[in-house]
Length: 343
Image (cartoon, rainbow, N blue to C red; front, side, top):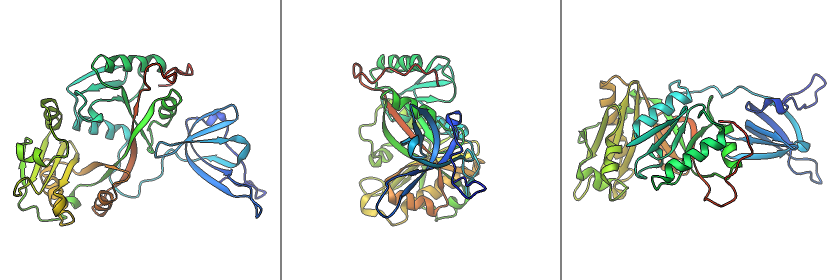
């Protein structure tokens, strides 16, 4: 918190700081034994009618009446990374998008509208990396029409918690009634330590997802469109540890320049905690190293404690959170905007 020369806490932010990363302290509950305070850090996404909205790293918006502010200041746009390869949000957004290629896409200014018959939200959502070329309300109307013509719900994928991420867009979507359905995190780490974690013997690598691999994959009834998405990407590899009726473990890796992206790492429930996930990732990491990659990324749900512990042990750390916002139902009364042209 900002402290004046006289030793007093001061509020050193104004409405002109909307869009900047801030740290504020507010009065939370005046009690008999004295006042209690709460600190909030995030991007100041609006300051209207005496109320601030701060969007935190996890995408949640916190509403704070200015009357309870005790102190506040602008802080650096993103905290310094302690480990893992340096990367901007935009670089990672483009790399991860290439790992889940849609079967159909269209540009709307700097936005990319993506569709793949509903297989994965990542391949069936808008990737908004810049200005859509229209006022936001008009752009969102175009998005709804595009997905509606394909019989799909309209989703916008956003990110928070990194320099250049999209806290203001999240706030605008929520203001218009778009609902955040999914939040996960993208983690990054060095690739070589993953390759060194285990003996990769017994892992079979293939360029295609065969019937055995698909038998272990959690998404059942995979369509031809899904197979195209799974097999799409600059250099895709599928790993299988053979089992009796189905593989004991599987994984997928997409090599893209310096990056290797891991996904679909799944283990037979009866054989978990036996090191098979690490073995699969080690085999894929060695293949990626051979192709010149040096850094790794993966996506993990916030409540998947087992996966988070595994990946943290491999040297991965969170880079940013990403979210999928779904359009409000037609006629809900929540899909008209405030007239802002933010995009």
